[in-house]
View: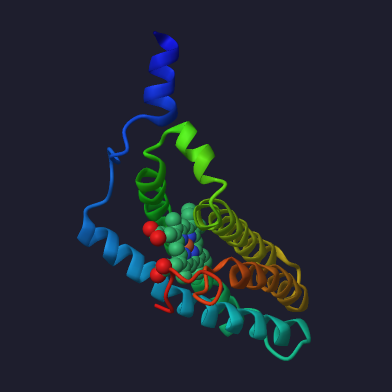
Length: 176
Ligand code: HEM
């Protein structure tokens, strides 16, 4: 009896998702999450370029470099919040929170690329941006602060670029 319950309820259960976001809200969140990628990339590139100039003594840290670092951090935090809501909905719609279905789905490239590669890659990039910002703020001088922001934000930029589900790699996704 418990085996039956375990297999039916926890592992596979019904095919109907029990919880999901209302359609309009889902579409609005997906459109903003998708469009914000471009603003994230522009701010992140500027934060890296300004930090490079600061690290070579051409620009003070307190000014455009620090502000760009902060705006980028706020924007990726918004992406994290929206991404978390989409993630919850994505897992609900594809697996209905059943362990057996989750295991099955992980072998499907489309599911795996979002549920694992995208979410994990982006999460690490966001942690790196927070670390870079905190370390730059605590630095003893402007050159050192510039170096810290440059290093952490550059690695985060590369990670974000490779973790975005671009339409030329994921044909079910669009440019916006
Ligand atoms: C800087 C951070 C991030 C960027 C730039 C980003 C960008 C994107 C893009 C461009 C898409 C494709 C949208 C489309 O098909 O139109 C997407 C989908 C998605 N993202 Fe992110 N993302 C970020 C962070 C995250 C995080 C941290 C999570 C999870 C906690 C997440 C969860 C998702 C999910 C679940 C989808 C698929 C939604 C669906 O198709 O139902 N994202 N993301």
